View 1 (tube, helix red, strand yellow):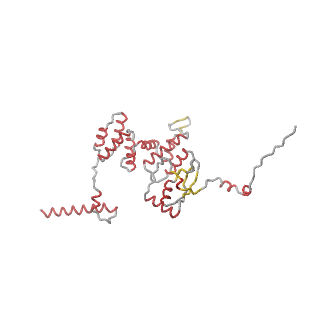
View 2 (tube, one colour):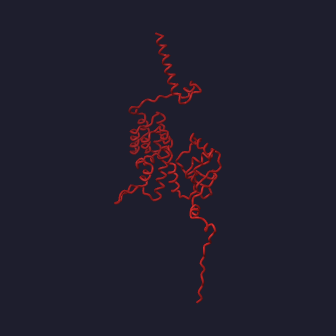
View 3 (cartoon, helix red, strand yellow):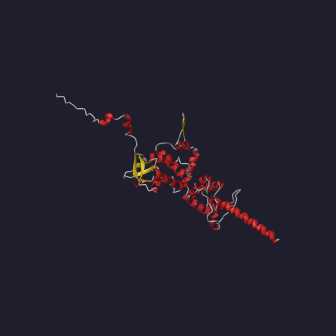
Length: 312
């Protein structure tokens, strides 16, 4: 029987393979920074962190105009040839304001959950984060971690306590597990009430309690807040929550509870800002307005006393 000779396929070796170093070959596998058209980069869906055109944004714009974007943004490729922003929404906005057409990017293939976790983690490094931003960011990350297989219920084993998604998130951000729960509860507030929390018109703990009210009850509460110019105390919010969960809370109840005078409540003084500004010097600086008004009142009070003395 004739024996067939088999030929071994020898891989082709290039000159680059022969003369490149291991370091050079390793570097070839590193992520590259590429310039991508800003128009081709879409924002992350339901991005929880606000991008505001404020003074800080203006400073970032001016820096980019002068020096360019020093830290590349992170994006992931999409099926239609565009990209999705993972980390760098503010740098992208500042680049737009600086009239840049492209922005340096690191392109990385990521699953939806991986992208969500990185997006949240990168933004949680900011110095100031609004309650609403934390609320939706924590919720998105918890959901992503859960889909990746991490348990969300507290479990114990013979070798000790297992970390769950809430505890993992709490440890990473220096919060308690209960505080993570509280923040996520804020996502149940109607947008108008949540905005009041961001603006510190409603305190954090009362806001958590009223998040248990139905949407209809929250909207009526909102009307009562505006009408009474008063927000619920923690005790009032707890009462509203209990009545709502018992199914007994009515619109009259909400109005009665909110109109109650709170302990040690100091009546608020209201002024017509437009009327006051109309009599102020036009060149007065904002920080000096209070001192000017106080001195004007003192001067007028002195005038009234002198007038009364003369009339005697």
